[in-house]
Amino acid sequence: MKKMNGDHPRESYLSESIRMLEEAFDLLNEHYFESALSKSIITVQSTPSAYGHFTTKRIWKDDQVERYEINLGAETLHRPIEEVVATLIHEMVHQYCAENDIKDTSRGGTYHNKRFKKEAEKRGLIITYNHRIGFSITQPSGELLSFVQSTKWLEQISWHRQTRVPEPNVTVSSSSTRKYECDQCGMSVRATKEVNIICGDCNSHMKQV
Image 1 (cartoon, rainbow, N blue to C red):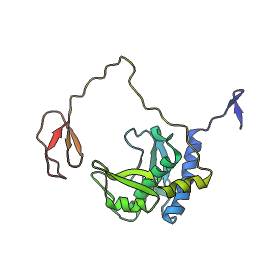
Image 2: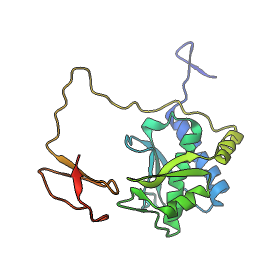
Image 3: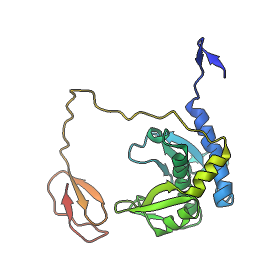
Image 4: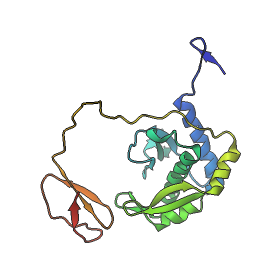
């Protein structure tokens, strides 16, 4: 291992982890999608409320090519590598559905339907249901665990972004808005005053939480 600053070993930088994930995309594309997916741009950005996301439009481009983006949450990279890979496949399934005109989500892309579950479970994932986000909770299957272990070069990522927490004795002011949530689907909205509101998806009254 190369050394820097005397006896301190050079640490693996985040860019090296992204290159590994780009190679993982190619490997997973070949193994689970028959190399049908176009190449996406892999990014690592802060997404405190999610493990990752997929852009439904090709937001990256140069003079000749436009590409989708798959992002992995910066706060979650230090999870077991098998779980990080499962998140990557989850987003790749979204890309597969986008490229094949399969409507796999609703409610602004937050609710995952049974079409998503079907495509995801073909590709090494275990999918379970949550009333707010649908068939979205993702775990690696035994087959995927074995596949990741067989690659040898997919390594644990130690770099991750630490979630910012308030300093001790710092008072955070409360919001002047009110949150309303649907008991049926979990959809939530905010209002600046008390309102009587109905969920358009479920036709049920939303309660203040």
